[in-house]
Image 1 (cartoon, rainbow, N blue to C red):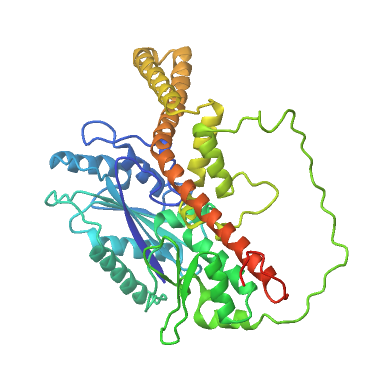
Image 2: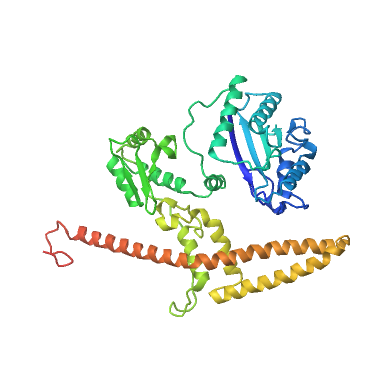
Length: 463
């Protein structure tokens, strides 16, 4: 069984693969006499000697591996190519233990010849550094035959997988005959890899919590409704669906995993019993911290402005919660949309607090100061390039480069704060209105329960 995929590599190599080279070390290529740094990065990664056993399993199609970068650059110059796409980076991964390194490389070379060999330059490298042997393909984006571009579309990807399956059958390897499901978006897969909450993971958390508290399907539906989800358990439907507030369309439950199919959900709910649960008579006493505030509450100042806005939003998202785990399933649906942006929001909050920025004017002033400093450093760096052989000048250049990186990052954060702040205000306003309405409804329900069935007049004066 071989899994195939391919990506285009544009101006710089920004994580085209999960384990790609560091983008901070990647330049911005131009199709001139300058270096094609991105192409070089991909080439160096694909032919890494530590992964290919000293480049023993590296081959070139219509080029020599040792000079492939220069040969591809010459083709681009010959046809005056100025496209943003530098090259294409693909891979072919085999099931663990199915192939030897020699077989994997041989299959990779045959696939490259069959797929691109008549028109494109390709470097094929077989990586041996993981349990699953896999081939990497670096394909020039421009054809040496006619100067036309390769098109990374669904039809070509299907053709690549078809050729790969044919070669796997030829070598008596397993093949996925009826693949199901769709490719997970890169942003979602990266968020899950980094442990960040996503829409699917939050939905799973809500469903798990609802199942744990349910004894019937009606209970299950009610518990999910309390968390802002609508479900459709129609017996005439093949697949049950769930839809959160703010979602454009419902999601089939089975796509969340094997534990969320129709049959498995019914089984999990039926496993709950009405058995009595015993607990200790004297629960463990939890110490409560007491904080002393000097002065009166009327004289204390509340945090406001941009800092107060971001801190309040971080609290609502659960970023500032200490000592207890965040329950993302219980968040307001408007807040759930920003769960995958928590890292960016936290960085922006730290910037505001670090520099005591409360107003839009103060934010603009700080951003302009950063840009002024950046212009001075760029001018200084330009003057020192002629002295880069001097050790002191070389060290200063390194310091300037690091500072410029920090400045550019903070400038981007300031721009995001200016753009995001109005959206955060609107979301918090809606969240607070909904929470206020829910509290009033709960209080009203409690009054109605207390006033019913006692033989005394109702507390609200109802007959």
